[in-house]
Amino acid sequence: MVLKKSTGRSSGHASTSYDASAGGGAVAVSACGQRIRRNVSVLEKVAVSVHDSRASTREAALAELIAALEGFLSADDAEGGYTDEILRGCYVSIKKRAAREACLALRVVALLAVTLGPGATSKKIAAVETAANPLGSGANKIMKATYPLASRILEAPQADASLVVAALECLAVVAFVDVAAENMDDTEACMNALWAVICPSAGPKLAGAAKGTASPRVLAAAVSAWTLVLTTTGGWNKKKKVSPAAPWRGAAAHAHLVSLLGSDSREVRMAAGEALAVAIEMKLFTEKNNGALFSKMEARASDLAIDAAGAGVDKTNFVEQKELFKDITRFLAGGKPPVISVRTSSSNYGLLTTSTWTDNVRLNFLRRFLGGGFLHHLQGKGLMGQVFVIADDEVTGKLLAARSKRSLMKDTRIVKELNGGRGGGGAMDEKKEKKQEMIKNSLEKKRTVKKERLIAYELKHGSSDL
Image (cartoon, rainbow, N blue to C red):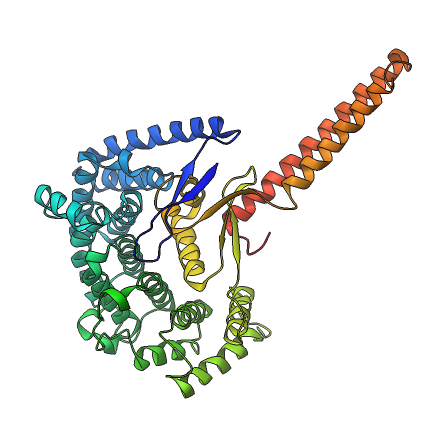
């Protein structure tokens, strides 16, 4: 497989294209094709079921659709009348149905945004598509309908926590995908809505779900969602002058994020740490312009990097928190951001490597959001190939070493044959060699199974190094 870079979107997403002509690709393409055909058939069936009068039928259809979209569909396979019907059904579920059904519908909407991609990015294409469809195409179309519904959930005074988290993730994913240069106003509106949940005093109208009492789960989800959208704003200084009065900009916003480093929740502290790291990398939060506040943040990050859990204290995310703030402390001291590497297949072909805080945050968020479908989307030719650059080399020190060993064994056997090693031993020697070969093959098979299990575990739970 050969990767070729092409001109990417102005948001900072790296655009890549694939050539799937590598050895072994035929089997993978065949299996992928079968999975995609199954997922397309689910799309056709669910387009009717989401409008059913029975809640149980609608919920079952949405759950089945989530599984299909997590399994990856290309934009060409998903685009069309079925998608429009599904979206209409989802919007009704979000607006009028119970919290459980609304959560499922919000996830479907976000996954469809990932599947359909950003839509038209040039003014010429956008003008043509707007004439045919006033709502636009791709995630741009989804954004226009989703933002009012998700914002209303965030405004609700006593909204269900799971529903608020689903709305936050949906809004962040749709805004992340819809990063065309002509649509910055929508992105900024999303940033304001997400920030209002993080800091209720910044937007009283949108702070109904928080009012200063947001649960750690909601607060962490809001900070993570806001940070994801923040990673798309890198080129705004050149193209759009964002209002200095935007509540998520300036010293007040940075001070609030620094204050979250003192939260009782490790989940909140980690989300705030990632947000600050991205802000520093993007030169939004600098020591020159925020002297005392920056020093306070450095001191707190250093404390968290050597934090001790203590006896009888919940140790959930304890190790992850220490590692994150060790990375942040090294970065503040002039070091580089951590490097994260993820295999794109169990055969050790393909390696996704990120080495900036911006890409690390994107990778971690999308891996959490897509869950078991992350690998399928990584192997597909959709959004993941536009956001990340995937090197198609074998994993150094892993597969190459195994292949070298097998090659050496093969060469040794050939030399023996050329030297008459098999000719003078008789039938007994030949039987002995066959038996040894069978034992060797059995051991090789066991090692392969063990290796595949290890790789599957790493793909599911993530690995920071190889």
